[in-house]
Length: 364
Ligand SMILES: *Cc1c(COP(=O)(O)O)cnc(C)c1O
View (spheres, rainbow, N blue to C red):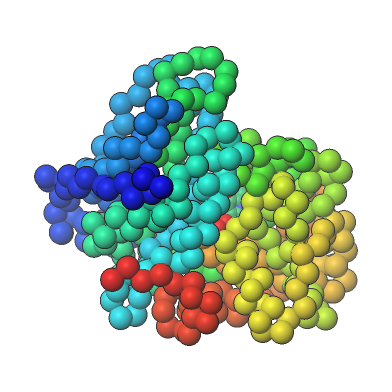
């Protein structure tokens, strides 16, 4: 396919951020507020298909007020990290999975599918040119944000005819301040994130927009994150606003909710399933009710709960709060298996443990 071999024109920034300024930004980058010098853009139109692939200085995107995305929210994104390995080289973690998921999100949102090798090329290009932005600190990485939106100037309601694909990169430290400290969760019993037949399995901005009022409520209740229940019965625990959930039981069983279309198929989730199965653990993808979560935590049958995703990797859940009260998970601190999974995964990602699945893709 001609499009898949599209070449990128490279127009480097003429005024790079100075080394000392960058060093001070990287000392404590936080999450999502320090950006690199460059971006990648690729356009799509019905007539030309994918075209005009570029690496340029990061800059504002001129937009017409009638650009379709501003009205009907045809937008999808990905989130992935480039790491510095122990030997100084840079690497991506399972980037083909992000490429595939981006294509699947596009299909759900009636958007054109970016060929997977073009997606992979685009993320490699930005890491190559902005690799000096990877923080040296523990937990530091270059967070890559590929996204695509309807750029056509048209108010009619139909899939747009023009799209802009962009990759930006942000230097990040550990996602939750204080590393793997246990977080508190607010269980939303009146807002839903995703419904059967909806867009819950697509990584689209709209899902996040719909989750924000519940997240704000969680914050108001003194919690770090919100957990959503299924929309149909308000009974089954699904996931957080941007992370999947795992439950660890006394008998050694591990449970995570199944991918039925309302849950985002996390790559971290899949990696943990693989690691846990290969460690001989009894892993089940099956529904788990809020009622059981509470009862099992109180009886001690449930030992641990953790959340996982690219941004925070693996994060223990310590306290669960809801309209009728609250309960603690285990001791309220990070549990043993949570810690073991976090170690196992981050060690592979950082190139300090063997990588039997070839998950780590070195760039240079
Ligand atoms: C991105 C995301 C996740 C985590 O996916 P990873 O591939 O592990 O980063 C989980 N839930 C939602 C809603 C997400 O958007």
